[in-house]
Length: 389
Image (tube, rainbow, N blue to C red; front, side):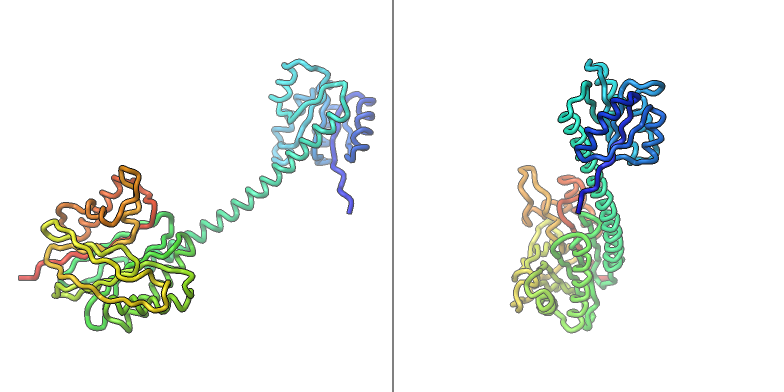
């Protein structure tokens, strides 16, 4: 298969010069179209679509520099970016500057040295080919970006739809939630469910990754927790059931942290179980903060999860916080990542409601690290209300 000859447009008002240069260029493998002046050059640029334009600087009516300026103003971007080499008998810097300011890609001084001309032509053709390749890649990248943005938008709408939209009516308890992904779609998910015995299950999970894959994983997570809660009652039973199904699907190739609590209206006893998840924080009415820690590795790592329930008594005015590790993802003043023990430092000294407690905590975190945070953040706050008189 032979390589197609690259077409050059050579414009010079001197017929002898044109003939000589045409023979030289054709011997070096180029197809040459000839023009005799600036006006014909503009017509031939349109009709022949050359790969490169060689222009004599000194021509009647329109000089090479003027033709160059007109080509650069062409409405067709491909022609406007055509490589142009000016051929000039002037070697002074003012002519070089004029040529380049007119938009010339390069210039060659007369008398023309054949190896120099060939090298300059080849260089400009290679640069044009690289520009075209880069433009094609940019076009493909823009298409990919548009598709990616559409996928993210669809995933974001899906994830928004599966997140609970309003707090549940739990007798004796007040509930608030916060969700703040790094990008449109995050790997954090939470929900609450009414159990068969009348209690409420609150769960939160942090899946690996962000973006569309994370949205799919969080949708699956919600299905797994809903299915588990229909057959299980305590937090530990729920986590064991979710882990079994998650492991059966991914065979240990994916994992997520998770935690659950159950509460019952009129009862101050809270049950908790966690799998590789940040601890449950209990902000007591008097200012003291206690924690219940996860007891087992994240879900999906082991086929069987030896998980058990922990418990705490929650008194009126106490606030319980379930959160993902986005709560301590920022760095402190010493540029060290925060630890779970640092989280109580963001709690307000007092708050009027579960929502106020959560808002004040997130606001204090934002002072340390303005949004966006380094990681997704999800949180559920539960406040025990005073018993009705």
